[in-house]
Length: 290
Ligand SMILES: CC(C)(COP(=O)(O)OP(=O)(O)OC[C@H]1O[C@@H](n2cnc3c(N)ncnc32)[C@H](O)[C@@H]1OP(=O)(O)O)[C@@H](O)C(=O)NCCC(=O)NCCS
Image (cartoon, rainbow, N blue to C red; front, side):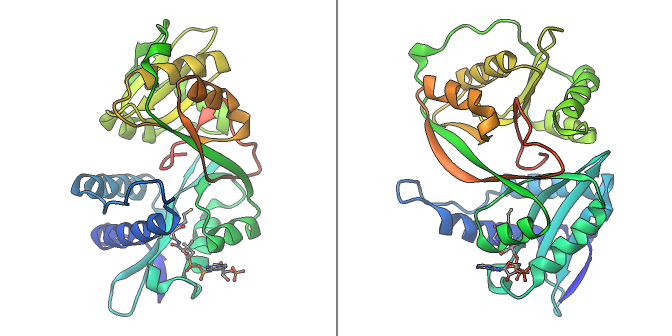
């Protein structure tokens, strides 16, 4: 098994490895009350490849794969440096290859790229993963997600929000820097291409949220909790069928309070892992761009 930098030609093989790895991981972690896990859709596979291509373009030194002796990609650790911050976008080893040191080699390569930057990522509950992260000096902050059907009778009119665009990226990056040590930089344009951007441009309380076409929050950042609450209410108002609010740590109990008021349930889910920084708030981290 060879640990080496990822290249453009690895994208399709790495995507198949990622789809198989996370399908099994999600099946193992599925609660009995939850629906069967579905294989990744063709659309999600294409988006995965586009996202990895962005990472390879912006910061190739953070993208590592493990290649077996027949040229298949058996694992990957895709991380990025953005100014003072390092984030781990995705990390996995094929089920049949786990527990043999492949993940450790990949993580060592990604962490060497991080240097002494502060770090952040979303961790699964996998015992091998959490062991690796703590040994690498990360603090594991428990997080919950909220799901359910929004009680439309409690939705209040939210004011002071607008649709965002590229002209908002400068102040959004400054807000990101205040909250997590670095702006999202080129990641904003990628998110804006596929997600709705809601912003609060008021000097009294700037903030933004990316929301998908089901109303699921992909990322939320705000200067104050009041703005964060307004953004989340707006996202929930646009939700169709099952609502979804990810990555809520205890510093973000404002999001739990909004979710509970909207009739959603709390589900325990993994950790926000951070090194040399606090778990950010008011902030709901993106699983892919942190
Ligand atoms: C997490 C993952 C990438 C680790 O890769 P791996 O190749 O299995 O890991 P390694 O064999 O290198 O083991 C890493 C460490 O975890 C330990 N470990 C591995 N599997 C373990 C298990 N099932 N239980 C307890 N410890 C385990 C190893 O002993 C090793 O510890 P060490 O560094 O002190 O020697 C891989 O298991 C995986 O893809 N899991 C499913 C997807 C997932 O959870 N990804 C992480 C998302 S944040």
